[in-house]
Image (cartoon, rainbow, N blue to C red; front, side, top):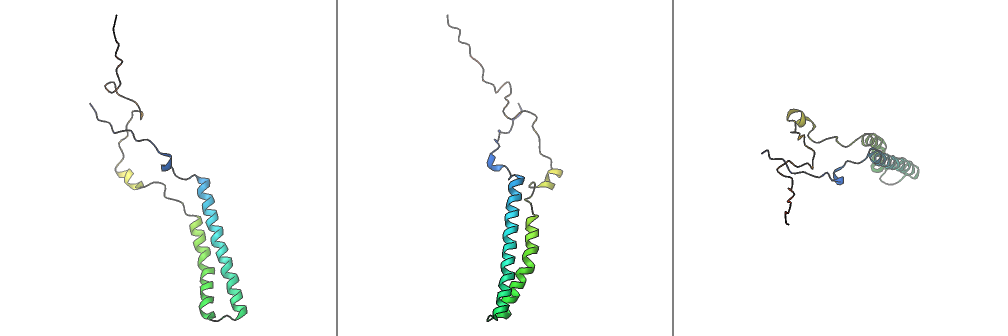
Length: 119
């Protein structure tokens, strides 16, 4: 008799996020980061116009935000979650596939109907 692995139900919590949901979250993250960039540009202009103290410190920080944030925003907006764990491992060690349907029982495992022969 061949031992089969126990049936593992597929949980909805294990499902990956939908394409639309992923796209919406990436778009929100991009808009938020570009909003922060706009704030850096406005803050830099206000600081220069007001001759703020420590201008030598604040202006490079605003400039760094104006340069790095768009680069990071594009990288993160185009980033997707990984498709599958151990993608290369499956090529070298293929999983054993069971041809039987998940809930099928063999003849020995099926419950036998007991016929009660009382007169």
